[in-house]
Amino acid sequence: MLPGLALQEIWEITGAAERALFAVSALVAVVGLAGMLVAMLTGLNERRREMAILRSVGARPVHVFALILGEAILLTAAGIALGVATLYIGLIAGQSWLEARLGLFIAAGWPGAREIGLMAMVAIAGAAIGVVPGMENLSMFSRRRADIEALNGSIGMKPRIGNAWLLLAAIFSSATTWRTTSGR
Image (cartoon, helix red, strand yellow):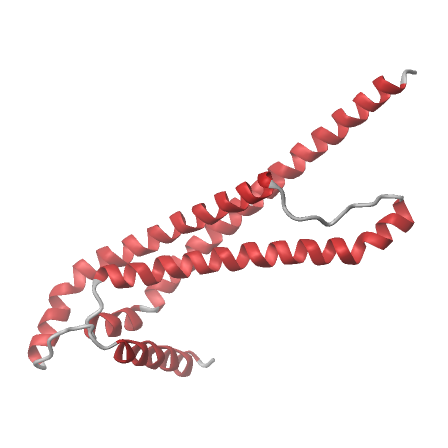
């Protein structure tokens, strides 16, 4: 058997395994993004009071949309960071074992251009996923706008968002109320 032919067969086998693992990891990313979408849409219904408080202190629909989009971006970035950290911790912790048991040495280097591109694609997809609950909130806002305006008119309150501390107090208040009413 020729050494070049044997090496070519080995590379073909490992290339097929690498493509299969890439497909599995792509499916994991898609399922994770779908789970995030479902969680955010479910959370929208549960956070109606928080959204109403934000709107009553003067937050415009675009502000609430930006908060929801920011949450999606933050969750996606945290997932990417946690995934990369887990990978490198596993590589560093398992290097000696892999080398001793299997004779394999896997170097833990910085992510390459391909990996950074894949992480960027996941980040963009996560931001795009955040648009869906944001748009749902906008449509919910437009349906309830008449009710909010009637409530504000009946108590003589004109919505404004000039004071960021008032907005933060409303967010903290709604989070505290949610924790106490949900038993957490």
